Length: 102
View 1 (cartoon, helix red, strand yellow):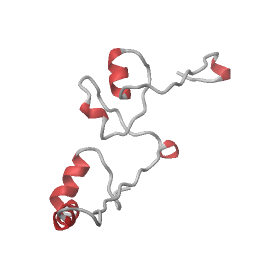
View 2: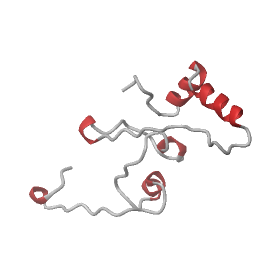
View 3: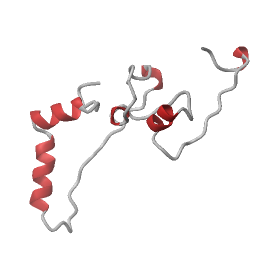
């Protein structure tokens, strides 16, 4: 299916107040774009693949411990844990790409 002036169709885009996966399942939208790690959380969704490279946007997540944290060592230990092979694989299994994967 094609869109745009030559197709005679005009896409309508509007933000939804629910996850796009939920809107896909209930039929209120025909196409949804959402972070790939969130789509499998919606029953009834089958992820068919990522967007083409030219349309993808990679998000970078960072972690920090507040200087006012009650347990700064626990925060630092958690951030260290995220770098372990176990945690890195769990993040990949959830649909996230890690530095070096892309």
